[in-house]
Image (cartoon, rainbow, N blue to C red):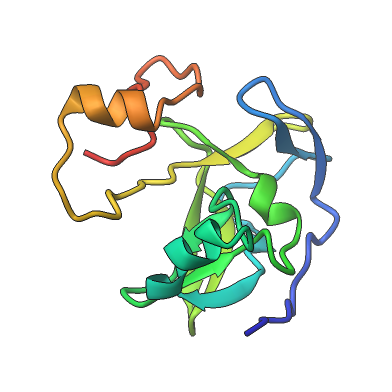
Length: 155
């Protein structure tokens, strides 16, 4: 199930090489605090199907955004540039969901050429509570923030 974007990148961003991880999203111009930057697009997938899709090579699970308790958006399938926004423990953006459509907003004034980030706040898919050591080993964070929690998993 594919969601079509009504608002694309509004010419605020470009994708380029990131110091955090792989590709990243960067401000092409100054972005004021509170600005809606881009919709997070991709196929809407029942969460119960994600691991099967992964096992069948349909997705890598790298670009999956949690929409609600039962549905995720897989930016790898029909996604847009929003999928390249990297995680940071001290992000400059956050995701807001309106009418089941996720948008990335600026949490602060963002200067031109700054990389855009948001906190992924990952959860354990098994439902098992992981120790801090397990969280760091399984999902290490490379954001480099002063207050980095060393893992993509939310505490």
